[in-house]
Image (cartoon, rainbow, N blue to C red):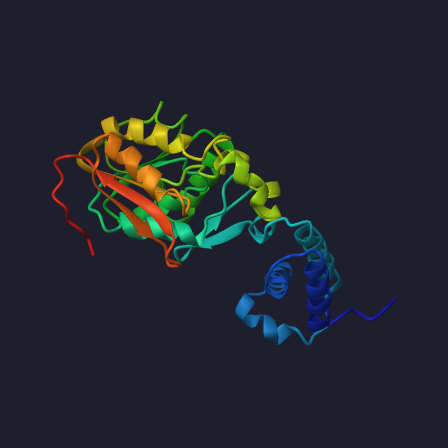
Length: 288
């Protein structure tokens, strides 16, 4: 039997496999998966790399690298993804929380709200984060997918807000109790014609219904905006995440239903990322 590889050797071999498979940031992913397979905190990994890799760890690591080379997302392999400083459970049933969505969080936290609705909640990362940041608020998360709602409920429990949030299976707002002073959503906004341009990690592994409306990318906004207006109290706010080319179109949809103070908020890369609008009767105020 050949001598076991050291951690450094195992990482080098895995990085080579992932690079050949076209995985971006192959070395970073290899380190993350090796730490997970080893049961070692990432910051301690360097201390273990000179040591021989136990057989069971190598076996787990090899299996993870094989799956990653097939472009399965790291988050699916380890079962979690960090978002706004918290760790969320993820699965193939939900959209991965993304850094861009933190722009929606920051925008929402600048409003005064006590009752929030998250439409298309998925993993629950948006409503759970907002409630964790606003201890006096309560919320509802709606989604058409029952498996997604199960993930969201576990994330609410993980972050200590399960007593302040309810999750409802609903086709947009059809089964949602009302009213709200804040409605937020990161809906499927990728046009069907754009799906082929997505990375394999997204195309192959994330739920298609959370990505595209199978049309022009604006169908979800039409439904959300139309139904949100009756569900918002006077002075309430609607905030939606958008694709970087959709700011003008979504703003127009909001103005068409008489939402006021409509504005587009860029993300940290300067791309249009969020559109917000307010019901008539609102005097602007902010938390921060």
